[in-house]
Amino acid sequence: MPYFDTASTAPLHPVARQALAAALDEGWADPARLYREGRRAALLLDAAREAAAEAVGCRADELVFTPSGTQAVHSGIAGALAGRRRTGRHLVVSAVEHSSVLHAADVHAAAGGSVAQVPVDRSGTVTAGGYADALTASTALACLQSANHEVGTVQPVAEVADVCAEAGVPLLVDAAQSLGWGPVEGAWSVLAASAHKWGGPPGVGLLAVRKGVRFSPQHPADERESGRSPGFVNLPAAVAAAASLRAVRAEAEAEAARLRVLVDRIRRRVARLVPDVEVVGHPDRRLPHLVTFSCLYVDGETLLHELDKAGYSVSSGSSCTSSTLTPSHVLRAMGVLSEGNVRVSLPPGTTAEDVNGFLEVLPAAVARVRAALGSPEAEPVEPVADSVEVDALGLRCPQPVIELARAVRTVPVGGTVTVVSDDEVARLDVPAWCSLRGHDYLGEEPRPQGTAYTVRRRS
Image (cartoon, rainbow, N blue to C red):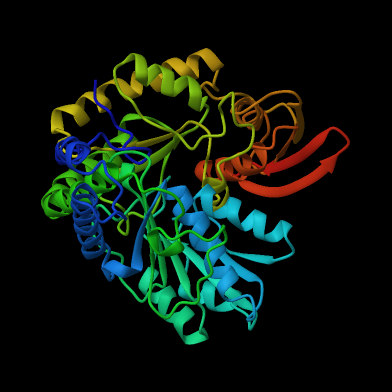
């Protein structure tokens, strides 16, 4: 069964498995102790730190191991903000950051700080100018992911870092998705990453803080890991994380070239094989192994189950699931279709046969979901009125858009349809549907029991 969800977590790399087993035998002692076993453990930890720092592009004494990538992000943001509290309490983030960054921003705002979000375009890309506009004299820290976890868009980190440096503001980079493919370019100040994203063991993060960056750890004093990550380091896991990072980097150039060909095939053929699909993310500036697309009139959770039954493990940023009633913040910020969203992220070693098999089962899987939901038929309908209002209260994604698609066929060109919905997802999906189908979105109006979204038919 092909596993196509390495953006969530990558299978354990063989080198990580070997290093973990060896370190369990040799690195179990406390590396802070002076006896033989402690010295042996300290040598292993130092070697792991050197290897990880080389891959990151920093000095070994600038890097510490943390219990997770999320912990690295939270510690990095809190420490950098605290270190520059005299400058101010303003934090700048992009609108498409990982939830770990946005949750840290929420905590900062709840404690009295201010947060500015830099918008993105429909490809999910920020601009250096957007960051320049957001920075103020009281900005203590800016954050930017190196590549997006949902759509694969690679951000202009070097350009943003230059803008931040000119303003005297440190830049924290969440490099979780990209570090396995190469170092992060530019003069970043703080960097966080997570080992399970590149085939290392779970439960290991990296936090790098450049020399000269004002940084104040926000936890009780601890003598380990330069005081930046408290507690006993999971030394065997850290050794495995560093070893696997070095291994995947050695393979990265060749593997990226090979996987990009397969991803390009998916990007091209999905739009041909499946009607009413929007491929999202930047067409060129993107991770080599990841592609995301959204399907009109499709329940994302049901589609994922259909693909799982066919033997393909994929993920989704779709809001159409039982656990999430709000749109993905990434897709919402981009202004693209969220319903029926599928994220495919290929692991190393994926073959053309694996991808071809996925493309063979996908159209039928989408068709089955659409048929079960009663998606609109293609036959023309005689217009019945110049203006129609549809009551979609109580219906959940993708049903409001399905009802809209049915209704728009009952008005003449130039006629309007108003769909009233209490589903939060409709605020994103109705405008995205209009963009995809070529109709005019006229805006929204609050109603006592929901929101009215009005559309003008153009063809």
